[in-house]
Image 1 (cartoon, rainbow, N blue to C red):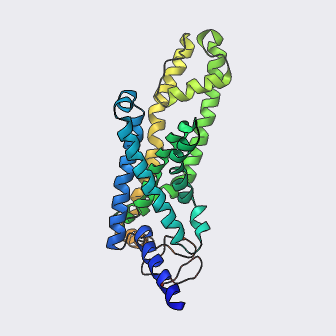
Image 2: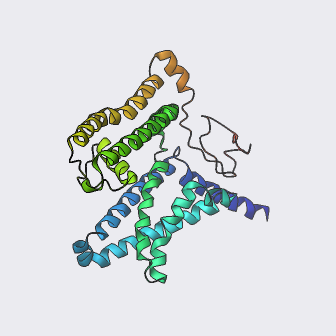
Image 3: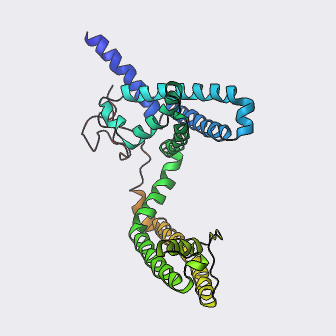
Length: 287
């Protein structure tokens, strides 16, 4: 009985090492294969949306999508059974993404009119972020993540300022232009301000009075500076992360290329050469 239990644990452990890790050769190849299949799947979703292509190659596209969906179904089941507490994966962010990106095709097969949910398959693209845990990307990804994290307060203040500016300028444009020029309400005027401020310019609303056009010109000029601000904030923080040798040395201690995922609680981001899980305390490499 103990031998059977040990054999069951061994194959589940090996399966876990392949589908959850990127440190092993098998894990790397699995992630590369998964990445390729995800990209193919997204291409299929896009091709199906082109009516001329879908009419001509519908059977081929559908067959390919079923093959990919079956693969993702097997992968999802394998992820569930290879972890000791399946709920930790099932109700995690990526667990939910995996499920939502897999079930639409099944729903379209059993329930009429559910084809609209097929677009949800594009969620598979989110899974690429998990695959990017490959060791060669970990340092850069960690540095970028820390730069964005350090910038979040400044970016939040910046966005708040832009929203206030949009409300003020939108209200002013509503008072100056009025409904005759398309500024029928303050919310619609705020919409125009944001569109102009971001230099999108749909052209569905345009000022006609000299005063309105002057304000619009000011908003357009401000737009160029506003677009550059978030990029500058993140760039400065990113430069700080990799600035001086001393700072870089300190920061390098925070960058971990370990992709080990705990089989007990599904926690990741462990320190390099870690033996025990920082979250639940269980051994990371037990067989």
